[in-house]
Image (cartoon, rainbow, N blue to C red; front, side, top):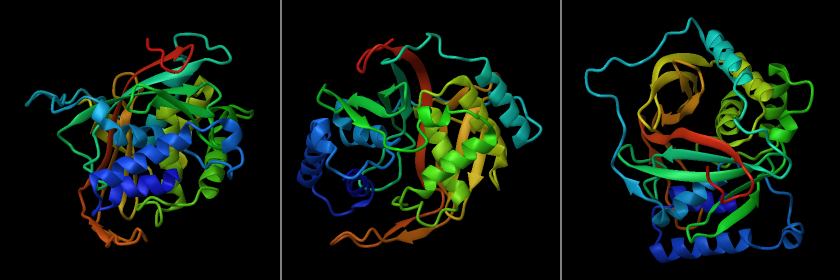
Length: 323
């Protein structure tokens, strides 16, 4: 059902506000159903971006403004060039190896993540370059559940799904090759439903999944390091010496450019910690959603599809807790 809601939310041109509210209500009701009831349904597919989508659907409860943080005009970008994408992967991995979470986690605890996002311009898939929304999510330390405010003040917990969770990736051996194999297996088992995933190469989808894992999963240091070292091994991945996250911070990016979309994973140019992500269309494309009454949609080159900044993370005792 979430896949249908995602398509409905992002790309349905002729939709009334009443219909959108009804769809949101059905989604939230299903997510509140007891686990025993949900177990009768097919196993859930991965949902690393469900929190982001639901927050967008409930964005009436989120403060959205135009206070975009950008470097002052004329100020040189604070970046330190790297020799190659492999060099960037190694530097980011070394930072991850020595940068555990500030609190030693215990079973049952959760990882709190605060992000800044550029919100979607409903009903299009384009996001607004001039606005920002704050998104807070909580992730179980085994990587199998995510929680967020559903827009009414109620914290809703849902399953992430099978494959490529924090727990899956932490099984020995933890190597770049194993990360590619495990994330690739999860990608292969996930039907392509996004408008830009259907024709995306396998390497593009693996890159995007790693981006989601680094941003939203409570990964232990050796897994994060192995994922960073895995990125340069994906065919076509390059380095961008000056990239900017949604909070206006300059950094360096791993870049994967496909036929339709360019995706970036941005890290700090000073200490190589994760800053955020960026995704933009690189060619015009018309696509069909196969929904009744919905005409084909066209996304033009240069359309911004995703822009985020990871602002804060901390281990907490339960969903809803804040640092």
